[in-house]
Length: 325
Image (cartoon, rainbow, N blue to C red):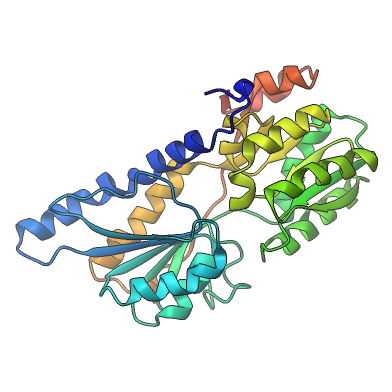
């Protein structure tokens, strides 16, 4: 169904995530195939994360993967990580900062590869990005003030006289406090005032957008969180009704009807994660595998969302876009 039908695109979001996640398996298949042919035990890989996208649950004779998803209840991650540790795994892939922390707390011996964890040193996941020094390493996406400034600049292209914006965060996300500081620093350099907004449940999104409108903000930046991801269609609808241009951190929001996102290349994230897992399965220690930071971000724009907002997309913005929805 489409967003116009009034039905949230949760199933489509999970399909998109799952399709990308499934790419992990064929990429690793040659290594597992070698193990099977050589008579070696088939490696066992665990996957831990907040949400439950389809596509990870693939089984072949040469693949053994155990998945544990918290169904968006972060308090379950510690117990799920403990379950994985008791399965005698070779590697645990942890999706997101909280999943990585849960896995790291659950084991000091099983290698943990985190995906898209934010500020891993500050989060206590690694002691040094170049030589992690323990059983944890992984892939991070560029963040910080520079990335906040890049997203802010996109909003300023659409709203040239932008003087007041809002940042929507999830109060239970430990990374959003620092992300908010990054936006404030970037905005201060441009003379833009920032208002913090939050929603702990999908039901609080309506009040958040009502308050933004009442406070006279002219644009919004939405921080990434699994709770927001499951309500992507709703957020896009509220933004359209409020006539507010919004920039997101994930492409899935634009696919659900949001205006634009400056985001990581999902394929590159998977490829680099696969490369690290392969190195570990071949015998390398995560303590000596540097954390990889992907700095290239892609811009995805939704033309229909722009039309609904009455926005004319400048040629300069269109020229920068990597994808148009």
